[in-house]
Length: 170
Image 1 (spheres, rainbow, N blue to C red):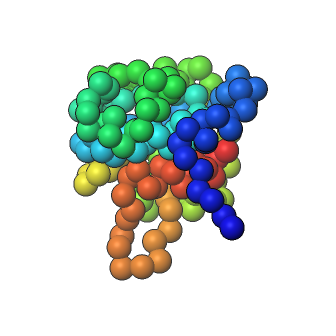
Image 2: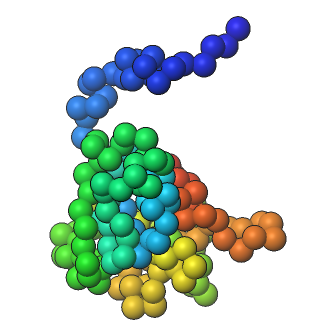
């Protein structure tokens, strides 16, 4: 009979060698994300995927905030993060350090996320829940990918979309 594991059992089960292994060469740029619950959910997913770092840009809220912590479920202390006011200069800095920048956005030239030629290290940028990644930032990206929509909805929640792309990358 299957038995769900408690949080205590799951933490005890973690292989300490696993936690000391290098992180995946994936970065996440959150540009102007307005929902702190989405920010927290993306912290949780980024930790689960063991990515390198999260950049919180523009109006994106930063920890400590109870709204972020509620959905991050204790992962904030284990996830490297940094706040940057100016996303454009961050993109330029990361590109100068050899990091490919890929926007997750629906445009007339977006490529299905499954078929894009990702080059690690790679940074995925996601934007504001309503207006998405700005045109200025899209122009600076090395590529733009999208998740196909097969139903009546034309997009996914940003935190859900981040989960799909991060797990695809790792």
